[in-house]
Amino acid sequence: MPILLFGSQHLGVYYGIGTGAAEAAGTVDEIATPLDFDPNKLQVFPLLRSFYFVNWHYVGNAPPRPDPTLGNNFWATEVAYSDGKFYLSYSVGHEDKNHQLRIAQSDTPIGPYEDIGEPVTDLNTCAFASDPHPFRNDNGQWYLFYARHLLDIEGGVGVGTALVVDLLQNMTKLAGLERVFLGARCHWQGVLANRLMYGKVFDWHTLEGPCVRKHQGRYYCFYSGGCWQTENYGVDYGVADSIMCPYYDGGKEAGPRVLKSVCGYVEGPGHNSIVFSPYGKTEYIAYHAWTTEVGHICLDKLLCTVDGPRCEGPTWTKQTIDVNKSYQKIENLQETKS
Image 1 (tube, one colour):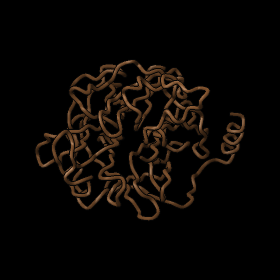
Image 2: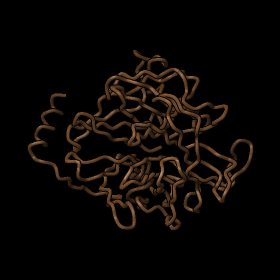
Image 3: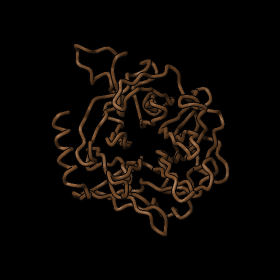
């Protein structure tokens, strides 16, 4: 499972958080030393910080793991800020089964975070949910986009992992108005034929990693599709005029249009977030990818074209960013002090 980055800026500082190797592999118990080993005190999800977008440093982990019986696999976290609080949403489960969404909260972006003590999704009605993405609309209303397993999708949509959205009553509770807004319709979005799931065999498809950006009055939901271990995996998008309406993603039949694997160089690029450069003029897409057997956090410029959003990537060589040299000196000094 690749590392995932969700970058945001708070009070002029950038933060990244994502799935580490232990969280993905279900070995969080092994990251504790014998002196501090306590399954109820382990912290998950590595946190990164940058004072000016260039140099990134590890600053700790958050939050403490919830009840160990919920599982050892922690996936795809993201942090939202509202009314002075930071809300960290994530999924936890047993390998790729029984994943539920949960939320932890903190007064600061680097924690400490505390799990709220109850799930956001119910395993009795939603057997698998992951990749939560909180989104604040212009009127201040929050929504939660996420991926879930659906076996009875109609209208030519492939069985598997689809994208849904629900309104948030508050930052920790869904309103119960869930709607499916995007499902797999293309061959490249397939993961595995004849996959045994829930006691039956399906040709399994996957859309995952939703990330919403509003642009010129329309909602663009970026998502990753397919199997991350194949050359077909990448990032595409759907567009809607209203936040909970079905999203149209026509034009992606030949493959993902924003990011796509480059065999031997960048594989499995996906589950992106979008962040502005320090000057607020250039948008960057932050995403995970693999080179050989190592997972990476990647940043590339996101472009607005007449054909829709596109990316100058994936790149695998050194890139430049227009950063004021005086600010670069400040960042280097701050990183030295931290």
